[in-house]
Amino acid sequence: MIIHEREKDFIMVAQHDHALVSREAAKSWRDDYFSGIEKKDSVVLAVREHDRCWIEPDEEPLWNEHTQQPYSFMDYPGSPKLAYYKEGIDEVIQMDPYAGLLCSLHYGSFLEDATSTIGKNFWVAEKQRQQELQKELGIANDKVLSFHLNLLKFCDNLSLYICLNEPGTPKEQEHYFYKKGFPQKFSFMNDQTIHAVWLDKETVSLSHSPFSKKLNVTLPYKAVEKDQIEEIGLVSAYRSSPFLYRKVTFL
Image (cartoon, rainbow, N blue to C red):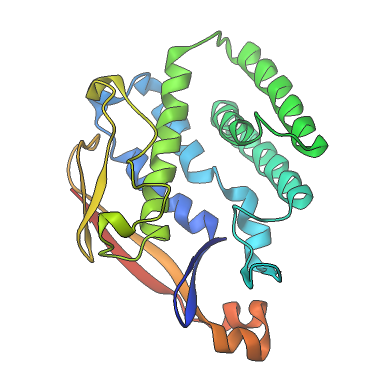
C-alpha cells in the first residue's frame, strides 16, 4: 500500500493500481528513445505487473502501532514482504520470462545491501535466478537490459510522484524522494536529471520528457478517514471507503 497522511485521513493507493499508471508511461515512451524496442511488449508487461506481489496484502492493509498509520510498502514487515516479492516474481516469470527477469532485478536491487539474514538470502536467491534467466534468454551484460530496468524504475517513480505528493504541492514541500529529481538518467537526455513540478492540481511539468506527447493518467485511490479507522478498524474502514480518482497530465 502507498500511504500519504493528511490531517483527517490517509490517502491509500493499492500498489497494483499505481503500477497500471506506470504502465501508461511505459506505453507512451518515444520509440526513438526506446532501446531494444523489439522487447517493448515484455517491458510494458513488466512495468504493469511489477507490483502484483502486493495484490493480496493490499486487500487487507495492516495497522502499524508504532507509527500510528497503515503499513506502507516502505515499512511493511520484512518476512512476509519478501515472501510476497518472491511470489510476485514467480507469477511474472510464468507470464513472460524477460518481464520476470526485469522484476527480479527491480526487487533484488532493494536488497543488494541488506544486513538481515532474510534480506541477504532473498538477494542471493534472486541473483541466482537472474543468472539462470539471462542464460536461458541468451543475455550477457546487456546494456539494453539495463536500460529496460531503468525505464521500469523511472515509470515506477513517476507514478509514485503523484501518489506521495498532494496535487499542486510546491517543489520545496514535495516528498523527499523527489526534491532533487528522479534518480534514473538516460543517454538520450545527456544523462541530465529529470525534474517534475506541479503546475496546478492536475498538471505536472517534466524538465525533460521521454514521451511522444503529453501523458494523461488516472490514479484510483481511497481517502480513509482516521475517525473511521478508530471506530471500525483499518480493514473495514478501507473497504467501506469509496474509490476516488486523481487525473493528472504530464507535460
